Length: 226
Image 1 (spheres, rainbow, N blue to C red):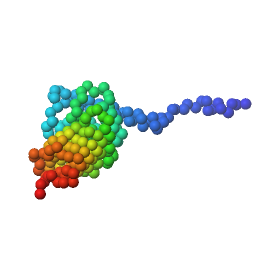
Image 2: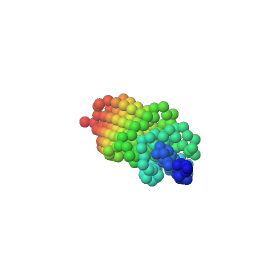
Image 3: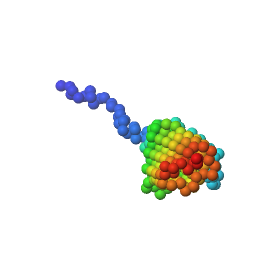
Image 4: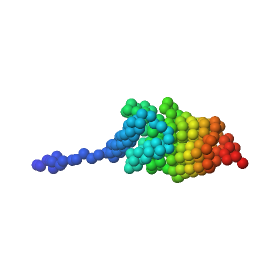
């Protein structure tokens, strides 16, 4: 009598990928590309020996960041993971605070989520330039103590800081809204063209060069003065 299972033994089965494994591999690939792009950016910036905060330098850094990430399908989890890498990892030859914040801002602006929330409360590292060029239709919520130039060149988005910011908050913002629950540092709104900055705690000082927009401190407008 023929063994009824003989035919089954002769069949060659090809192992199929489990969808979860495929997803995890894709996520690793995305993070590898994010880290590769950031390392390439900071290595280029480090050749200048010092990262100077000036408009042309910031614009160039942002353009380089966008080129590195614009073809990636980014989600909030990718941005959170990258922030953790910056906080904990030794994978980076150079740690320059300005480009790090600009790179994160590019990721936020080009990610698929319309609303991004980043809790940086327990971070020892302070990020600058978060919310840079935040576009219309995007909402960014930051929690913790932030660095300088938060919301700089904001371009229509809504930025909420559940905490305090350093100096030059909203510098050069074009339109949109910045909400800060605690305090802002010196020269808040410097070079501001439009939009509104609401500060619930206090403003250490407003910018000397303000060309438009509004700054409201504890519900009272301090720019423009009526």
